[in-house]
Image 1 (spheres, rainbow, N blue to C red):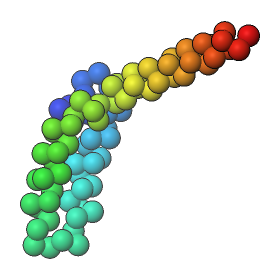
Image 2 (cartoon, rainbow, N blue to C red):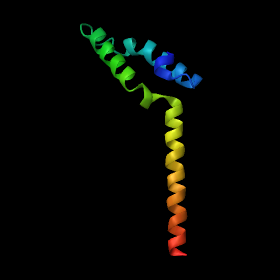
Image 3 (cartoon, rainbow, N blue to C red):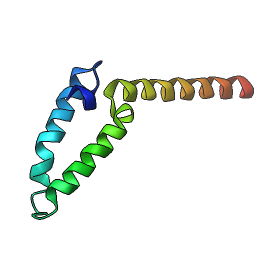
Length: 80
């Protein structure tokens, strides 16, 4: 769970544990290919684990907010 959720966040570990345990149940309607699809989804999750890390998402949101504030401040300076 730490691999998918990240070491810096308990929330990420809990969310990844929930995803890994509930995913086979969600794929139950695929009787024959369920495990193949499950394995592919796990591989994709492992590949993009840095993108899915909760701490990285929080940093990304903070970066977007600071850019928005900077753009608003710059806009006020240009108009004012």
